[in-house]
Length: 448
Ligand code: PLP
Image (cartoon, rainbow, N blue to C red; front, side, top):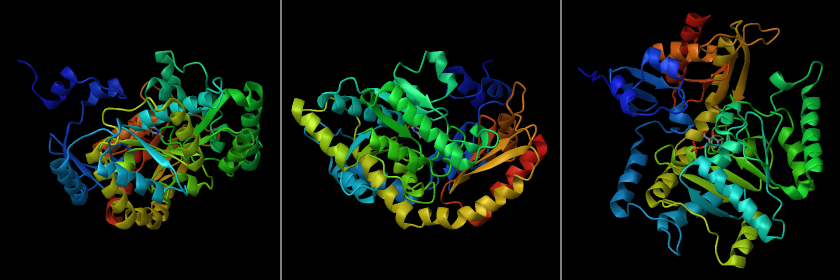
């Protein structure tokens, strides 16, 4: 007889992406039925504290009544529409006004997508479009960093600086990856953090000169690298990079898919790291994970140039069926209100020192090489030898082993490279934070 367990049914007809298959074969899939606050529940009745916030996005938890009500009301009123052909929903108009109001920009315009990948893809097409319209069709190369994550579409995967994309024959030509600004791993012996930052700034300038500024369409960066393993920039990195990009007239795009709306303790990561981008890429927290949606938020200068480029051929020929979906926009309006006005962003500011202190205690474990992060995004990197920073070997990565031990404790956290990542929802209470830290500590004791 066919195995009718949820795990077997999941295996039979669902194709797993970004999933360690040996772990699944060994442990089975966790099939999730529902959530309450920061907790999720599976088909076996087990309860887990989700320190992964879904995938960085469920910042208000899994059952926020205000977000559910906003979705229900808009579904009842007007369930779906696009934002082109000369039509868009009232919710879309209001969300664009709100996004510009809360953005670091004095003015600007918003373009909607269904995901962060599509928002990055869209931004690249916008840059290609406007440079070509301004008489520079060769200004097409995209600069990003090694270890960056910008998505999975062919273009955003090309921007992503992860070696796994080579299985697809990516990156596409013209996508260049600079050094990751991770001082602990990338710093040379005897090099200070300031010298490291200067070396990376020099590398950027040398690359621009070698390639030719007139061949480079833009530079994209996450304020804190998320899927790269939570890597805050080295000291002074963004101001140094921004100055060089300005000098060579290369737009700086801040990919705030993770950092946006409070994750680093301020509304935007660019605020936390003191730089002014030319555009912002947003998704995830934008709807608190209650709707798949992304947005390109153009600052005033790129907005005007994009408008002029579009006027020149009478349209910007790009858009998705569900761009500016009214339910997504209604949810995003509510999510922004919830995060900014219901104390969620304040929680991150107020409680992140407590989180850092708790993690610092745990990081005293001799097999933890580095604790790094800011706000509500942290990583503990495991090492075989702390002095030499030697990574563990073995077929199942150490982070996978830690994450599995966490799952056994009823804690969801994410293995990334040699690190285990915690990015809890902003609604986490102090007792829940303590519970999360206790479970993590117990899991680490099982592994080391
Ligand atoms: N950019 C960043 C910084 C991300 O972290 C992600 C997803 O994790 C993306 C882009 C891609 O977003 P999506 O998965 O919605 O396509």
